[in-house]
Amino acid sequence: MTAVVYEQREVRRARYAVAAVFAVHGAVTGSFATRVPWIQEHASVSAGQLGLALAFPALGASLAMPLAGRISHRFGARAALRGLLALWTLSLVLPALSPNLPALCLALFVYGASAGMSDVAMNALGVEVENRLGRSIMSGLHGMWSAGALIGSAAGTLAAHLGADARLHHVLAAAVLTVLGQVACSWVLDLQPAEDEEPPPRFALPPKSALLIGAIGFCAVFAEGASLDWSAVYLRQQLETSAGLAAACTTGFTLTMAVARIVGDRVVDRFGSVRTVRAGGVLAVLGGLLVVLAGHPAVAMGGFALMGLGIAVVVPLCFAAAGRSGPNPSQAIAGVATITYTSGLVAPSAIGGLAQATSLVVSFGLVTVLACGLAAFAGVLRAGDRDRPRISGPAAAVPGPRP
Image 1 (cartoon, rainbow, N blue to C red):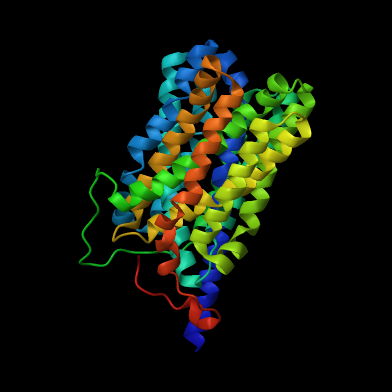
Image 2: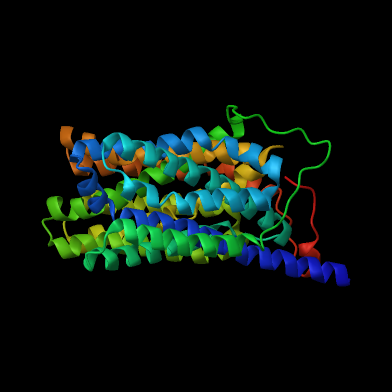
């Protein structure tokens, strides 16, 4: 009994540790995003060149994420996460140091590659902790990522307001976040591969199950990217609101998603992944219809809030289902992450291109159609419910077989 209680404490401690890792990861993203205008000016690149450079993080992540499983197998989960997270936090300094477009593209490639590998490693550990606790935590972990991003962006906004040099700002931020990340990694689960376990391939196509799960994530991330980048433009141009009210819409959407993710685990534990995503899909579709049909800013803002509420927990549940969908969770998670990263890259430009050819109303009509896919195909997430042990108490902490 004493061993069981000790194991329970260890797993609970690992839960808080991996939550801190998610927050640190998000804080790096928030710190970078707020200083993009300074980086653009420092590197002397045009808007079009900046758009090209900002495609390199997704490219780096897509190419590097399949390596995360191999690294975790070679060094163990804790050591791998410690190294990959440090690489990610330290890479924050590279874009601000770039003097021209080629250097900026290379810096953002490394930045994205380290982001993707650490993303896969921390999500794989999150799924393992969730398995051992016997209840949903992935939504809350991604909520911590959103909270970290908000903190990082707030600090970056303050630094920009004070006119601080982004090189100094990012060196200080990277130092603080690296220390916090290393401390948090000291308490995550130290998973080691079995002696007879074959190492995962360096590069391999994701399994079919991950492709189907990734398709659900694609729909959710497409709606998220479209709303984050175009909600303010929609209110400003389509409904002719003030710039302040338009910006408030984007902030409200972000806060809605963060809050929904933090409280989403209770909903998932009560209703399961499939029913939660189906209900979320219905909310997202209703929100999209309100946006498309809105004749007043308040209606559109309510629509974006509903959309954020509906899609908030989808990506965390996709990662959780991927981690239980086959014998190699890191490979499956990497496949899902690659698809969602691609969606986040495609969505803003696709919305803009369609709006240029037609209108923003038609663009968000496409978002609404894709949101229908959440309700229609949520059944592919059933693995996240089928394999999760529905237990509580000390026995919940007894480790079972690795996924």
